[in-house]
Amino acid sequence: MIQNQQSQVIKKILADRNLRVTLTQESHYWFFPTYFPEYVIYETAGFQKELIHITEDDSIRNAVIVAFRGSGKSTLMTMSYPIWSIIGKPKKKFVLILSQTQAQARLHLANLKRELESNLLLKRELGPFEEKNNEWGSTSLVIPKFGARITVASSEQSIRGIRHGAHRPDLIICDDVEDSNSVKTKEGRDKTYNWLTSEVIPAGDKNTKLIVIGNLLHEDSLLMRLKNNIEGQKLNGVFRAYPLVDDSGNILWPGKFSDACEIEKLRQTIGNEHAWQREFMLRIISDEGQVIYPEWIHHYDKLPAETPNYVVTGIDVAISQKDTADYTAMVSACVYGTGNRMRIYILPNPVNERLNFPQTVERVETLDKSLKSITSHRIYIEDVGYQASLIHQLRIKNVTAEGVSPHGSDKRSRLALTGNLIFDGKIFFPSQGAEQLVRQLTGFGTEKHDDLADAFAILVLKVIEKNRFMGGFLITGSPLPDFLR
Image (cartoon, rainbow, N blue to C red; front, side):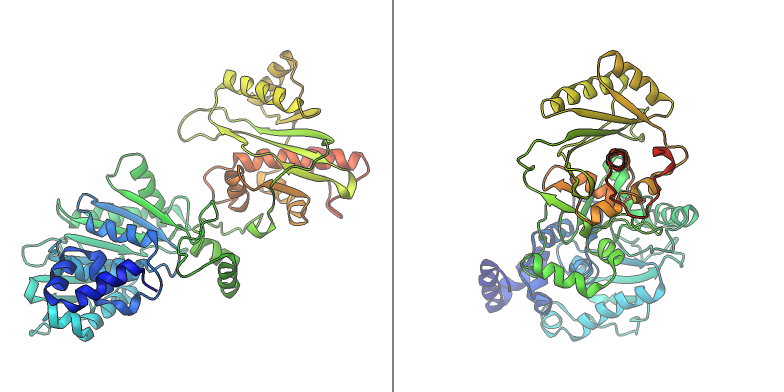
């Protein structure tokens, strides 16, 4: 259902041809619902308005867009936008649409051709669009009235030196130019990135607008490289990511999905957790598979009323403060009960910062004083090289810290040992304040940093060790890992 205000305006422009033509040529926002009303089934979402604004804003020269499957991004950006960019205000002369395969590219062209040939209102008021010399082929549409061309190609084809008369491509749209296979190897990722930067972008001119649409398939994928370039100010542009449900639990298209029940129904129809996370939640999923799944996470709003048995903190220390370095992570929790009745409540706002040695000591001291006000506090730090000096310095300052040696146990194995406790609801996470920790746990192996996840594993496995010592057996049949023996 279209918004009431939008409906009223559309009624006016449908009743007045001159107003309709003038307004829709000036505004993609009004062009789309006026000439493609069959696509406007639900109330327009805020993120869709942002996408349209990107197409209208001439100051945005490069845009990288990631949005959930079914969001309408391709309808807006590879169907409506190319047509409006030619017959509307931008007056583009050569639109180039690129996909990974020729089949995908031809499908985009077929959709455009169908609208230009069969959309009666569009043809009557802004046409004709027919090409008398039969240049409407499998890869191009020529629109003589506007002196323009739309061409599609794949990443398998060379577009070096491509032109339409005197015009180089002045609008380039890349839609799904990589997939899960092409991002598996660094060679494949480099190939796609080099193709874009050395062939696609140079094919344009100084006023060319570039739109790149796709999914986040790898931490080093084309879209992630472009995102990093934009955020590092190496590329002038914008990056926008629109998951179906954001980190705060907000549904980005409430007009189509009214509540969490609707989201869950959709999720059940997908039937593949990896596909759901990748296609709808925009999370990068490792080919090795997840260790912790989002549906395992149990939340709490308030800590139990009773005093905990003790408070514990796991610390993963980073050495470098460089922008590319890991973070120093400190995850704390309150532990209640023993044996099979033991429960671990992760405390909100874990430390996750780049700290030098004195800052790390100071932060641990402050944290220790704060948590000791609750009850006894235990600190566990991975005892490898540099970390040993931190433990020594803390003890000088009367902060009791114990080293934990990994003994060859890798991070994935350690985190996997916490999975049963998370799944069984023996570990609780705060409703707010642990979003980044949960993201690292559920995206382990794909997230760029895993420091919080490692600090979490150190904490939990030491609690398991203590509980076993007290006679509790929380992971039946699971051997005690070497680094806890």
